[in-house]
Image 1 (cartoon, rainbow, N blue to C red):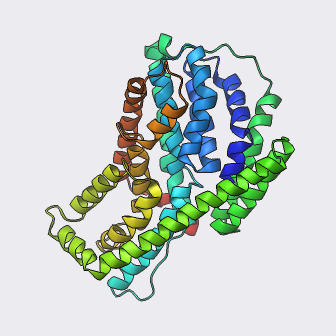
Image 2 (tube, rainbow, N blue to C red; image 1 turned 180 degrees about the vertical axis):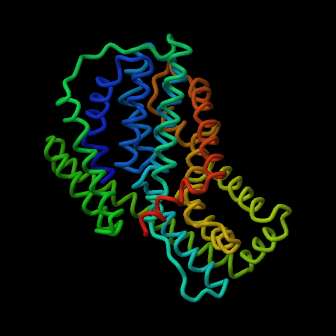
Image 3 (cartoon, rainbow, N blue to C red; image 1 turned 135 degrees about the horizontal axis):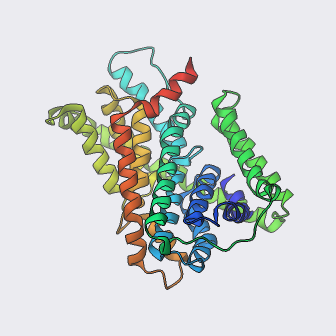
Length: 381
């Protein structure tokens, strides 16, 4: 689904529609990038694809409109990482599966022989409020920046669009997202079945826009197979690593370390979050999900941590680490497609405010866990 949408120019039409809608206001192009990036993240769930696509399509438009390079680069990088938290994110799919197994193991360790379960769908629902909060905070920051420094985020000169033209670019991908998410949240389909529906819908969308040929379909199939093979090879390697790690008593060692930490559960969570944040500099989220989470997950869950809250915190943490200089993956993705006049220093400076926003959002989730747990509990009733 993600690869088809990436190659069918859906993002290009979306960005054009949003630019016509918001572009005439100060900071409007930046808001367009955030909204389109959110929809693209929800469609593809792939951070690299979102950052590269938005960098190729929107960065030249923002620079031509007179945007400060650091602001334009920061907005694109930050928006690209929304693919980690906005459902149906690939990160949440993998995290949901790993955390489900970890939760069952934790309950068996506590002699609970009728264990409760969490699903990928629960994680999707739990991520909705934190993800939308993050998008809202990005938009508020861009509006405030444009008001304080009008020359850094001026209004763009775009052609006026009718409501019908805007809807033509917006409704098809929005309908696809709603069908995929709606089928999961309503219980009508499992995530795997919903993915099949999404892939079929994306293919029909591409065919309707005349953006799908035999050659492009071949590229989509090969790219999909490469991504799938990579995930499964990492999963096999991680499973072997975890087995050896447990066999030599590593899990008991970490359990003992956490139990003897001053500060108890809070200190244990902080240590895990710091380790995941640092690993996000050098490893992709797939490796961290498959290698680190199966080791620390059961231990934290045995200590009474809510699995849904933990999953959303890990996803947001990884999102922040992918944005943090000097090694953040999103920065390198944008550097690869940015023109020479956008320096690496400008990209680094641009993401700093967005990193602070994400840390603020994580702090809000820390103090108000109901942001992640309230909606899933409501839908279960």
